[in-house]
Length: 438
Image (tube, rainbow, N blue to C red; front, side, top):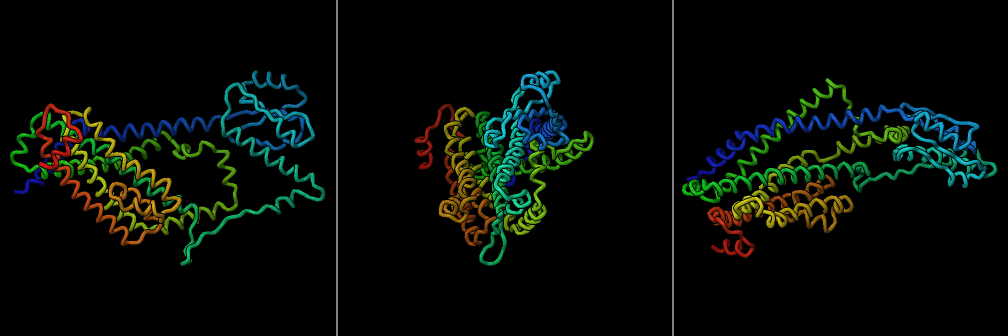
């Protein structure tokens, strides 16, 4: 008799009715949203802070560059010595003092600029000052050449943007490549976290039933393979339920918190507000926004969704069966450490291969080979698909993944059926190999 549905139902209800499961399902999104809101609020307070920077320009070359902004005010000092300027800044508790030595040589000016402050200055502030001064001094240096004006210098500047297009006439871009990699990276990270969280849940469930000896009662009427699959599928369904609740509850809480406390989440993304403002002044920004929109529309969305479902489920079931086998082989979580690294190493390798290889050469030998290896394909293939992978390669990779999962279930079941009744002995790899031959 097939008891698999009963095992799945029992495992699912046991998980979702557990008090700790219910508490963490409710508390986790609350804690996460609270942290996000706190970071956004603190970032907002930091961005609302107004810095006052004193300027002592003895050369007279850069003092006209600085104009007040929303977050930065400039206080120009004249007819004072450097020491007196320092005392003024200290007394008024200003953010810092920018000093330019007295010289008419532009190259010497660039080497004699100093910023004095009580504490270490912000990297954003220093970068902004350097950018403004560098641009002005470069123009002044060019003006020393006879017969050249600022208008001619601006007219001589050429912005190069290499248009990318494949042989079929479809336009591509660097922005599109980043978007494609971002999808694969997000999918790989989600799979990695899902395996870590709910794979460990499966392993702990097996260990608990084994140490409480309840497994001896269950195994008298249920086949070990059905029990193992039931645990994997039941725990997976509980995990999906918890994940969906997190998404819905988190979205509602995020909307409520940002509305009530008037928190602007965009402030978290722009800590370098002045530098971003300079980038926004680029006349090509609208073209870039349109290009990003076109790149998003050109993504194979349907293919990505279907592939994500197959590879996510296949990869999770593959690793979950190994977690169940490890749980059956040991008596407590402490003994699992020797078996966890060989399981996680292929997944970690897949993430590194995806990030450092797929973006550089998505159709190269390394990327292609790892997209067919079942322990790495759920991550690497998902990163390759946005760049255009033939359908036959995707189907072949899925079939290999499913075949490997079935073999892994058989492999893990042999360890599982022996290990669940073994007590008081730490297993070794040699012992596990003997169990496979029973």
